[in-house]
Length: 70
Image (tube, rainbow, N blue to C red):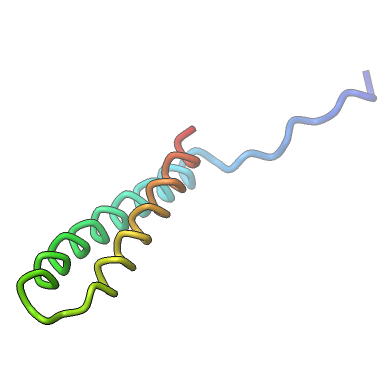
C-alpha cells in the first residue's frame, strides 16, 4: 500500500471560482471595448489597433475561463 501515488495537488475551489469570475469580467469588459472602439473605428478616423487587441484579450480570457471551469 505504500507504493500508491498521491493525488495531484489541486487548486482549491474558492481560488478557481475567483479566477473564473475575474476572467469572465475581464473578457466581458474587453468585448465591450472591442465593440465600442470597433464602431468608432468605422465611423471616425480611429485605427483598428485597439479593437483588435481587445478581441485578442477577450478570446484569451474565454479560453482560460473554459480551462478553469473544466
